[in-house]
Image 1 (tube, rainbow, N blue to C red):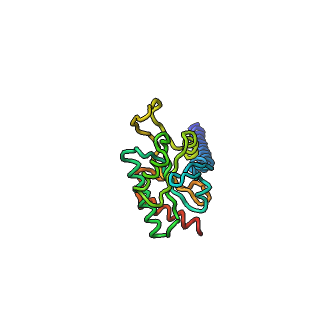
Image 2 (spheres, rainbow, N blue to C red):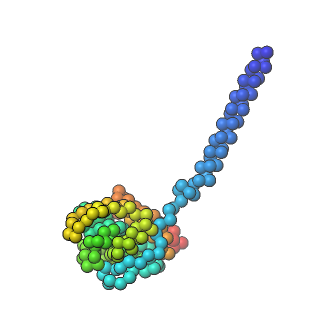
Image 3 (tube, rainbow, N blue to C red):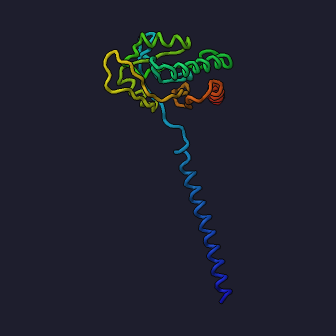
Length: 209
């Protein structure tokens, strides 16, 4: 009787062990199945056209084809974060010029405050950061559509009168796009210029293999 109970107990342990293995295998397969969805690159960017603040001519995704671009959304009345990020972008461009060459990486500033950021204001603003920096603006609807393409969060006070001073809350990222206009990577506020430049260099080498 004791032997029979012992055999049943051991059989239960064996079955429990096998069941546990099957469950783990199933979980692993589920993780592998979801990997591309969870860890794949998000679909950012797309076709758009805004206004080049320098030339006052249409400029957009089609004009950036053939070169890598680094895109930042900000606003000219930003007291500190945008200037710091654009200074960092300028460093990345200069590092790239030194290590890879000129006209390899195009820096782009897109305003997310079109109510105040006219072409003249954007043109004057970007002069403080880099000679290669291209400033883009447009109508509120146009900017909203482009921000949506890049999944950029933008929020400003709803009830604003002419001449009011206000801040715009927005996502703080550089978006790296390849010469076909496809999204490669994004870099947050904590990313240092050297790290962004090194990351770009890796993408550049991989693209040109």
